[in-house]
Amino acid sequence: MAKVPVQFTLNGSDKAEFVDSGTTLLHALRDKIGDTSPKGGCHQGTCGACSVIIDGELRLSCLTLAETCNGATISTTSGLSESGVLHPLQRAFLDTFATQCGFCTPGMIMAAKVLLDHTPNPSRDEVVEALSGNICRCTGYEPIIQAVLTAARSNSQNAA
Amino acid sequence: MQLRKSYFADVRKDDLHEIGQPRPRSDSPGHVTGKTAFFADRNFPGMLHLKMVRSPHHHARIRSIDTSEAEKHPGVVKILTAKDVPHNVYTILILIQIGPEDETVLADGKVRWKGEAVVAVLAETERAAQEAAAKVKVDYEVLPAVFDMEEALKPGAPLVNEYHGQNYYLYDSGECRKVRFGDVEAGFAGADHVLEQSYQSSPIEHAPTETTGCVVAPEGNDRFTCYTNTQAMFFTLDNTSIILQMPGSKLHFVGGTVGGGFGGKVDVIVEPIAILGAKLTGRPVCFIYSREEEMQISSPRAAEKVVIKDGVMSDGRIVARKVTGYTDAGAYSRHSPYGAQKGAGHYPGPYTIPNVWIDTYCVYTNRTPSSAMRGFGVTIGDFALEVQMDKLARLIGMDPLEFRFINAYRDGDMKAHRQPTEGAALIECMQEASRAANWPVAEKFMAMSSYVKGA
Ligand code: FES
Ligand code: FES
Image 1 (tube, rainbow over the protein chains, first blue to last red):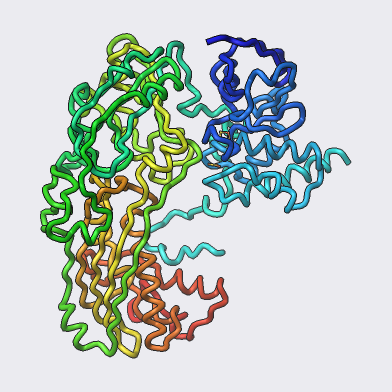
Image 2: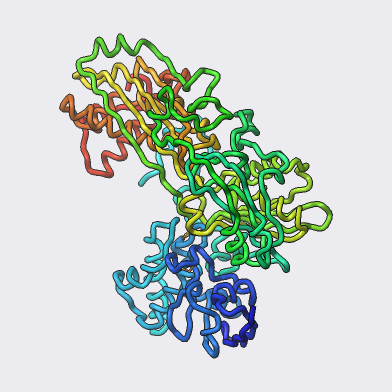
């Protein structure tokens, strides 16, 4: 099968790969580049476990073709902590017990990050809305909502 | 919420200082940084992908299987049928002597539920495996199927599973698990009221966010490492050892990281065939359920039917309880004979009743085999029992919580299956619930105790 080149920035570093035409970004990230933080829970756009951030927008990597990401800036949960220091969202997920099996967690954190990037002080309803594309089978969602609100508060305290 | 240490004062001398203290979980840092390694995060060069050809029928004889077209499909490396599996007929509970072996790894001559695995295709890519699987031709002769437990138990019903010979699991006690305590008919005869109700549930899928699967890597010395999300590591290892007729020392299982289980990942389904594929090709193999397979193929909680007949006095005492429970195992046993048996031990619920009669059946139908899920064998029974308790309270015009205080079991009471009650604490829990829910009960109930004699 014909291979196509793809080139993008992932968590701040340049990546280039040859992939089969039609390869999903999820597959390229996990199996080619080796970033396994986005998870495949359904491969059909219904669970949100594969969520990544492409040019500032929340996207499902299982429904995104790798070849459409040329030149893009992509972030995943594995690139969130800097020099071993957890991002406030990661800290909050730990502190509020917002993770059980952990399979949904990287996708949840991506969805939460896009929300806080655009809306630093969200209401509870805005948090619920922002996470509505991500399924968690374990926690019952409440600790996750609390984690996002907690992270928002700690961000605004740091900014003040 | 307060910790009432007095209840366990005699048995627990320790001060239980951990309770109420949050402690960080050791696995969470991996989860929030994306570093936790789930089985599917393992990738090996040259890894093959396994896809199953599944039965489109609920019940059918297999006349023939033709894999010739599929074999020619580009990328196909190996195709497996029943004859490739060393010990193809198995049952997981054989490890604890619960037989007979009644399930095929790959269907042999017959399929007994829609979705049953028939042929395994191993190919270079997931897509090639999928496309080749679609080219496998299986000629079926469709047989009459039975989906309802009561229909399945009738004479003349289609026989679901020949390894059992009848549509129920034969216990050493006969066609069902039985508990007999006191004289239930005399109890009904002397009761002020008798109420019989039946309760039914449908199968429930666990729906874990991570689907069932495993990745197998040959170690090059006839030993295989299997990365799996099973909830039952050693159970799976031992059953795989039986199915593949391979000593356990050749099998190296790595797991414990499960992306949601809920009981849905305790069956031994993906590992034996993936390891067999790795053995016969010498290549790493990945077998992951699609989301559709997870929802349709993986075992759900069993459908159950529970019939409860109670004799109750106007003063609130239950004097007789008869329970007939039916567990729908689907086409194969898996954990269901155990689940149905658990039900027999669990009824008549946390109540002291002088006359009890219990029959629980494990029934075979042409439905997806059911298995473990969160308290299987007792959860649906508890739903039925507690709805029944509310109905009985209403029948005699009594507060439902006070009604439960009257019947609650206490330490020292003999249970129907002849285990004396120990550490019951039901009364104390209900007292706490009464306060927490602001559902007041008469003072005499608040003065009761599970463990102080005469209180
Ligand atoms: S894997 Fe992409 S939404 Fe589920
Ligand atoms: S923590 Fe298990 S799915 Fe969310």
